[in-house]
Length: 144
Image 1 (tube, rainbow, N blue to C red):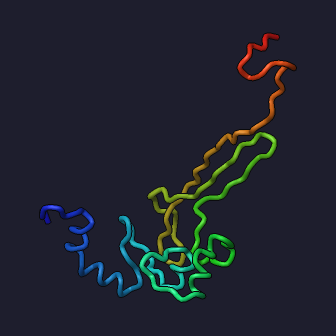
Image 2: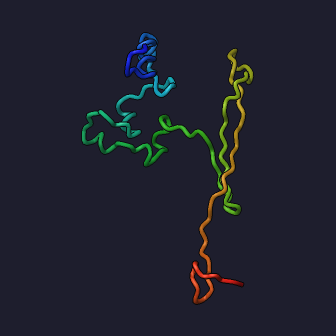
């Protein structure tokens, strides 16, 4: 594994090639340290992942359409958080439910993961015009 020029990813794939082949047979693949569901060709086209694909004219027209109208691809796109914007205070609230690593209970004889809600508040900037005194500009001293 310590060959000159070998990458960590390459070593991982060499060491676990049997496990990776088994996952691929089950419809999963290993990407960026995660095990994810493999996408078929049409799903890749809809998401715009077309690098290295040979496509027909119809398929080229469909490239990236999930991002144009996400309601058409609910099974492919996932929203990790919800957000609201308070128009009066210009504060956005982002909320996400995450696993807390504990057992949250049992359902149908199986344990379910415990979760907690993370909330972040972001103040949004607001651009408003300013009024400079007559005959002055932004680089002059305005005084009172």
